[in-house]
Length: 540
Image (cartoon, one colour):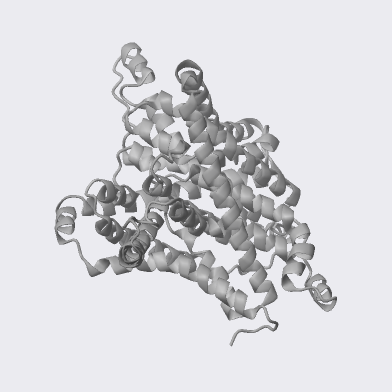
C-alpha cells in the first residue's frame, strides 16, 4: 500500500502510473519489435556493416572517455589549484563550449581543414612537401567530441577540487608529500566520483550523437538507425538496431555503478582549500597558453568562422524560410520546456504530498530518458504509436465511418513526447532542488489552515520555487533547441528547425549556408551557460 494520507492519493497514483507508462512503454516497444525479425536486413548488416558499427562505436566511446578525462581534469586542476595569468576569466570562459552543438563544431572544422578547404589549398601551394591533412578520421571525430564534451568533466571536477577540505591537503603535507604527490594520492582520488560522473555524461552524449558522425560519414549505431528507417524504410529493423544501442547504454551504466564506488572521505567541513599554488615563469605562461588554446579551439575559432560565413555568404538567408525555421524551433522548444517542467513539478509535488516507494519509483523512472539517445527514443515512440494507430485507432475510425488515417504517428504530440522523455531528467534536478528549499513546516501549516493540495501548490510552493522552475525551463529549452536525431526522424511534414536545416546543408557540403542557423543556436545556448557560470561562481 502506498504511504501517505488524504483524498489526493488516487490522483497522485494515477498520474504516476501514466508518466511511468509513457516513459517505459516506448522502451518496451523496442523489445517487442523482435517478434518479427528482419532476417534479410540482418543478413545484410552482418555481412557488411555490423562489425564496423560495433568497432566504430567502441573506438568512439573509448577515445572520448579518455580525452574528456584528461582534458577536463587537467583544466579543472589548473583552474582550481593553481594561480596563473588569466585564471579568473578562463575559469568561466572554459565553460562556454557548452553552448556549441557538437555537429556545429564538426562542420566548421571540416570547412576549415577538409581537403577542398581554402586553408588546405593555400598550404599545398605555399608549403613545400606539404601532404594532405586528413581530418575525416576516427581521431578527428573523437577530437571534435572531446572539445565539445570536456566541460562536463571540467565543471564537476572543478567543483570537487574547490570543495575539498583544507585539512586533507595540510595532513598530506605534514606527512612529507610533495604537492604533485598530494594531488595524485589525495586530491585526485577524492574527486574521482565527480570526474567519473562527468565522463559518463560525455559518453552518453557521444552515444546519442548523430550530427557529428553523419557530417564525418563515420558509421555508428545512430547513423545505422537513421539509414534503416529512411534508407530501407524499415521501422522494425531500426528498432532492432536501437535495442543493440540500448544494450551499450545498459553496460555503460553498470560500469559507472561499479567504477564510481563510494567517497571514503567526508567533505562536510566548510573550510575549503582556497589557497592556490602560484605558478611562475614558463610554467605560468604554459598553463595560460594551454587553457587559451583549448578555449580558442572549442569556442573562439568556430564562432569567428561562423560569423565570417554569415557575413560573406549567408546574409541572403535572412528570408521567409529563416523566420519560419525560427518560429518552428522556438515553438517546439518552448512547448517542450513547458510540458517537461510541468510534468517534473507534478512528480516532485506527488512525492511531497504522498511520500513512499511508488512516488520515489516514478521520480527514478523520470531520470531514465536522459540515458536514451534521441534516435532510440524516436524509434521507440514511433513503434508504439504505429502499433496504436494500426491496431486501435484506425479500426475504430473505420467502424465509425471516419477516414482511416493515422492520428499519432508523425504528429507533433509524438515529437513533444519524445522531448519530454529525453529531457525530463534535466528538469527534475533543478525542480527538485527548488522544492527542497521549501521547508515541510510551511506545507503542514497550510494544510492545518484548511488549504487543499492544489491551493498549497499554488499559494505556497509556486512563488517559492519559481526561480528553479525558470532555470529548468531554460535548460530544457536549449537542450531541445539543439536536439537533432529525434527532430530529424519524427518531425511532422513541414516542421523543419534550425537543427534540421544544419543537417540538410552539411549533408550537401554547403558549410556556409549552415552557418546562419548554427550561430543562431549558439547565441541561444549561451544563455543557460552564463546562468550556470553565475551560479557556480556564487557557490564557490
